[in-house]
Every structure is written in C-alpha cells, then in structure tokens.
Length: 112
Image (cartoon, rainbow, N blue to C red):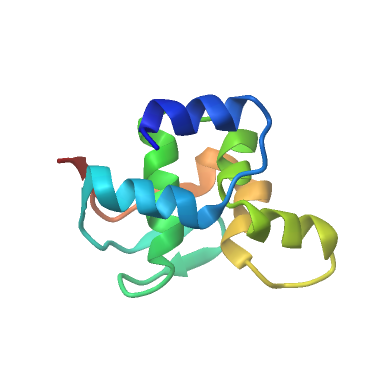
C-alpha cells in the first residue's frame, strides 16, 4: 500500500490497523529513535517508538487530531471501549492535549 492509498483509506472512514501504518512507515522512511513529550507523558528514546513513528507520520501529512487517532486502529478502539482505564496512555494524552501537547526532542522520520 502506498502512502496515498493509506491516506485515502483513512479519509474514507475505513477501520485502520496500527500495524499497517508501521509497515508503511518502515518501508518509506528512515527512522531515528527520539524521546518525546505527549501532554503529561515524557517518553524516553527507547519507549513507545511506534507512537513516535505514527505521530511524526501524521504531522508530515498534516492529519487532524481525529485522523491521527484513527491511525492507532484497534488501540484507539480499546481506549474508546474502556474510558476509565489507564491503558494506551499516549493515545489518551493525545485525545486530551492534541497537537499542542506533542513535542519531539529531535526529528524521527525522514523520507528514503
């Protein structure tokens, strides 16, 4: 699947899979691990790098907050199904703080 096909599917309202986006990113981008802040969470360089990849991809493609959340696929659905839980903290913080709460220590993705 190309990036354009992925974005078209996302914008059509299709159910997305986190793994599909990570595979696409791994195929099309050079990845450099980096720490990042997401609302009240400080993610170290070795933590939550799937989220880091997803957030950077979403920023590159100027996705809305809701489009970005849908990229998390089943994990976003887990959050919606369990609002009282504390699982998937990066998703929950992004729901609260949005793009304004997201800061990276250094760039994570660059096109191949």
